[in-house]
Amino acid sequence: MKKVIKNTVVQLLLAVAVGIGLGLTAGEPVMKIILPVRQISGQVIFFLVPLIIFGFVAPSIASLKSKASRILLFAFALAYFSSIGAAFFGMAVGTEVIPWLNISPVTEGLRSLPVQVFILEIPPVMGVMSALVLSVFVGLSAAWTDSRNVIRLLHSFQEMVLSLVRKILLPVLPFFLLLPISVY
Figure 1 (spheres, helix red, strand yellow):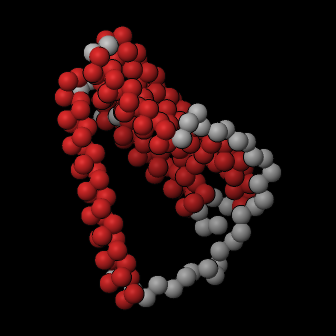
Figure 2: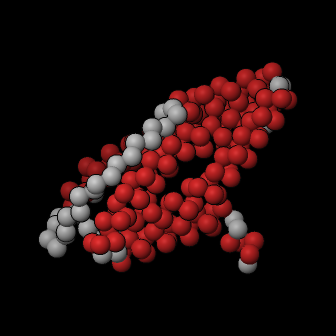
């Protein structure tokens, strides 16, 4: 049982459940405290996203060694064609199914959020696409040149990012999820 609870995916799901549960039960005085905490936790999460992308994608590509180009080309082609298929599927659903649905807005009974007094900006190191492209290029170049030092460095960075996920992201995630689920 302890091994299951120590699993990062299980901890992430528990953090989501705790955030949703607290968000459904929080009142206005609690929301006045939660708003700044949520804003700061959101800034921390958005700061970590590019690091997580680079920390997991680059070492994974570098570990593929000589097969990296072919596997990456197949993965990109699969992603491209599946996104085109999803776009056509979404278009079909949007034109054929949604007009038949009876969707009425539910706005009565909602309360406004308290005014947020404190805002802290923590910009990410780089954008998400920049992190993705950089991680692909670094991973491919490390695989092509078979640079053992860079591959070791990337795996060390991956371990560092994983510890950031476990020790920072998982504890702040429930606070980030509190507000969107709440009744406000």
